[in-house]
Image 1: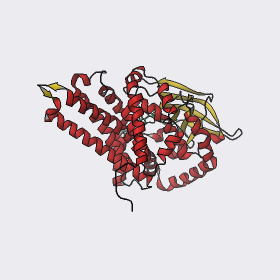
Image 2: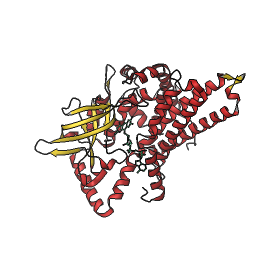
Image 3: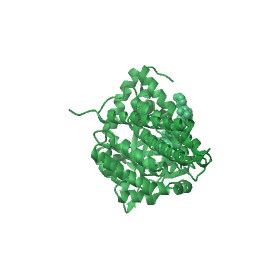
Image 4: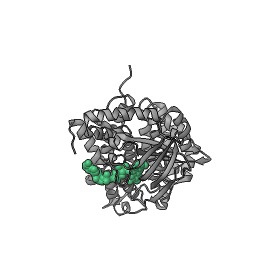
Length: 409
Ligand SMILES: Cc1cc2nc3c(=O)[nH]c(=O)nc-3n(C[C@H](O)[C@H](O)[C@H](O)COP(=O)(O)OP(=O)(O)OC[C@H]3O[C@@H](n4cnc5c(N)ncnc54)[C@H](O)[C@@H]3O)c2cc1C
């Protein structure tokens, strides 16, 4: 009879310590430089690849960890190291999950290894869903995929935005509209293989934080991909569309919209874990500083006003991790998120990261406000967590709708 426990098993502990070592020895010393350069840290991705930390095998192993804790543990340690570099390392995973979730075995076997390349020739991949007019409102997507039956090819046209690794990726996974009548249920995902004509990078964004991670527009102009680049295959798509057309005529558009919002529920704890990593890093910096910085003849932590802030910071970091672990465990155990537990974990962890990193700056005083100390960067980095993979407002909407069963707007 298994006992209730929050203890990681021995294998998990050794993987965690191994990632922590890479985060501490390789990522941390390079963090400020790549933040300033605002470029993809290819040499660091390559170092990660050399030790097996940037590979399909490693992420698949964590993804299929039966306890569910493999991915959150990995994310927390990497993002503890540095959020921008970490996103450059795990960004490919977003695209890989898109293929793992929807692709056939053959598609997974063909495309996912190409997303990572190998240690001598590392590659990254991009997942392109958001558009200039379709951010939170996924159903407003306009990028079109039209089937050319004579050639058995799909033709993609549209503009994607905010794509992590967009334009520098080997493989792009693109979500496009195949049936505009069905809202977000009329979408399908496509592989755009390396070097496909018509796909180009648009604007590269200069960002507030996670600046080592490349974010750009992706422009698709008459991009032709073979029929077998439709993830899941055409018979499955046709069957799904026919089912949705039937469902729509009986249940209406609101149901379709709600279902779309729930789609990302399962991946949200992973983003929550990233936020926990950044929050924990800032808390640790602040604790150390408060113990060593002397004012009025004593360490500043001697003041309850400072010590109590640290107590709250640590409490919130641990609470965030517990919500993330609960949701991750539920997902692995096949438990339904009846109270939107995935969204809850992302909402709480991301808001915690913003708050805790701001408190860390306050505790470091003037030093905290400079780029001489890492908490300034951590605070800038933390702002992304309440925005991507669904903003905090969208998480609250998902939670409130799930709890109430009402179409809250
Ligand atoms: C650095 C970065 C990396 C990203 N990486 C990717 C990626 O790899 N692939 C990808 O596809 N996308 C990516 N995104 C896009 C990201 O998921 C979107 O930015 C996000 O979904 C929000 O969309 P938006 O920016 O259009 O904001 P909007 O949807 O325009 O929202 C603006 C504001 O309005 C609020 N709002 C909107 N609707 C409601 C509502 N119904 N109720 C209450 N408030 C509401 C939002 O919460 C927000 O505060 C990335 C974004 C960034 C910044």
